[in-house]
Amino acid sequence: MASKRQTESPPPPGPPAASGLTRLEVRRLATIESLDLDLQGGFSAFTGETGAGKSIIVDALGLLMGQRGGGDLIRTGADDLLVTGFVGEVAASRRVTAQGRSTARLDGEVVSLRELGEWATEHLTIHWQHSAQSLLSAAHQRTLLDGQLPTEAEQFDLAYREWLSAQTRLEELQRSERERAQRLDLLEFQAIELREAALQPGEEEPLQAELNRLANLENTSQGAAGALELLSDGEVSAAPLIAEAVRALNGGAKYDETAAQLQAELRSALEAVQAVAGELRGLAEDSAPDPEELERVQARLNLLAKLRGKYGPALEDVLNFHAEVETQLERIQQDEHDAGTLAGEVGRLAQQVHNRGRLLSAERQKQAGPLAGALLRVIRELGMPHAQLNFRFKTLETPGPHGLEDAELYFNANPGEEAGPLAAVASGGELSRVMLAISTVLGAATPAVVFDEVDAGIGGAAALAVAAQLSRLARARQVLVVTHLAQIAARADHHYKVEKLLSGGRTLTQVRRLSEPERLSELARMLSGNTSEAALSHARELRGQGQAQGLAEPL
Image 1 (cartoon, rainbow, N blue to C red):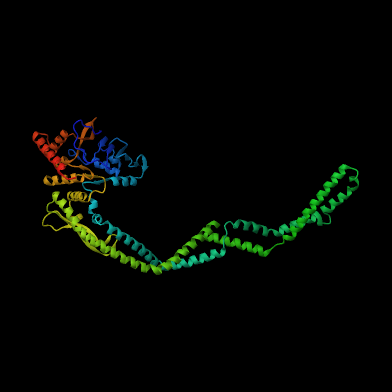
Image 2: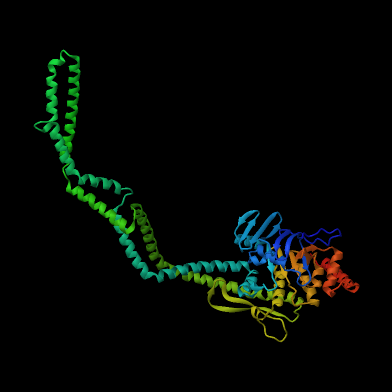
């Protein structure tokens, strides 16, 4: 169901959404049939009774970020689901079919699911109730610290990558020395063989034609001699007979025009026969067999066939192979030269890594205390007054890709207990509040931040502190929070209610933005489970405190 525009005075608008989410459209997802939700900047709270499906909104946004989208998410009876999110005028959507196939689009153009996820993660961060898993990673904890000293971290990274590249290259050269020597011998043999062959593109076909000609020279000579015998050299041959015929017409040609014409034609025929006879005589004399030339051409063709068999199948393939052999030979010969100088370069780069690493370590030590202290102040405000938090370092035996030591957060929420690695000792609710502290102190990396049940396991003063932190974060980011606590909802700039209803015998989930009177009723329900006058009075008091605190906080 589309969100409804209220006639009552809306709550304070909060900061503009900037590049945060401006609209969310959901079709056929779980119990949602159709939802069009306009979103504002600042702090938005989503509340509803247990089982109302508050987290469906987070699930919809998760699909845009590339989370798993199976057919089980599709509303019963539907063939697909569709989620579309808008950041300004840019629309991003994902359709999932009942067969589990996904189609992602950015501004109408089909893109890969990876590309959609990359786009979404530039604009949106989601902290699920049990998804502060990235915070469990010591590597992620180290990046929080290194974010305070980007220059030193970047310089070490550059030095380490240069050293690693050189070291890897040296190890390859040393490891493959015997193989390289064997390979060098083979390449040199092949290069010499192919250089001496001096292959020419397209030479094989003319050679084959020349071989056929040379192999048939004797037949050519004999045929020319036989034809010459018949035309002029034989006892009875064509040329003398034609000459006699010309002489026979001498008398008649003087008096008869036809005889004269025929005599002229015979003279032409005689000249033609004599010309052909001359060419036949030259062909017979020049076509004597040449065994040496025949052997040379045959040997060349045999060589080409041998090379094609080894490096072919075609002559062009042999030429390409020769070019590749020369390239590899040059590379290996360069490797031989490099191996002699690379060891010294690796040593120099290793020293540079240690120098940059010591600078990075010193800055980490310098920044770790203030950062942990800033986080700890917020964490203690969030209902953990006895919490302890600090960075601990463990020196590595050899430099790693991120420095000379590992950095890890150690945490303790209870007095008298020894601090342990955050990943090992923090509960889900404690992790959520640590994540909230990080987002507040360091700032979220994206324009929009979503918290799903960040208030798990807290209440009272801790809930008020969480609300204050979320409100503070919302002054720089668009903050969307799914919550069950009235203290948090009361501080929101915008309040949305997620509720279920029956329509046509089926369950539907709708989300609507609440007017101020509706907010008071919802806060009363969250506080007392009813909307009695006492509950409404408490809600008005809480709402008034939230508005007053929001105005009192510095921008």
